Image (cartoon, rainbow, N blue to C red; front, top):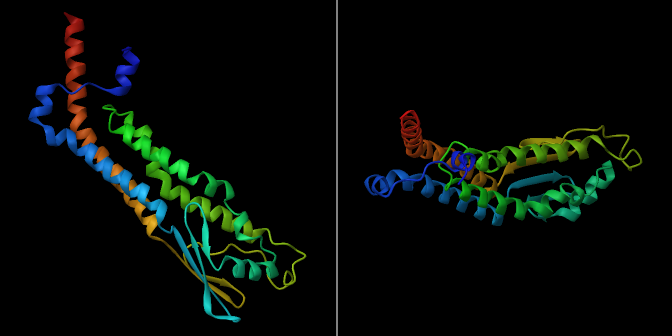
Length: 225
């Protein structure tokens, strides 16, 4: 094994060291495993909810976004949006929805790989999973902004509605329409994954940093002989 590869992977844990401190070395793997499960399970739960109140819909309209599809009153909301010149919801984040399952599976495998890297470079493998919740918010905001600021000037009600940025979280609205948006269970599972990965690296550093320093000291001593 080359020196560069050894530096990337980190030192091997001696058998006697592993027997003495089994819990210390098992903890990062355990925390990473729980984080991966949260991330994988998030696929099956909603990431975002939106309720729209309109005069012609006294019971409200509901939209639910999963990582790979939209559900709820999509057709009815598209019908209302048509009058103000907003594009159909299905045109938003089409690539993201198509690739989402594969991206989550990739993050799942990267976090798993981080458990087998005993050096500081393991963090690089987990960066996508750590930043994923923020990326979801940024992507959601991007599409809401893009749709709201690029209204069709030929729409029936274009003269009465100015371009706007729909509210991503909380209460918002335009004209007679009011919206209430919140994150769903899937999103909070992804957040828990991110938090647990960070916690896992605390235990990862506590386990492997002393071993890395010890190995480096022994190598330096052997080189100086």
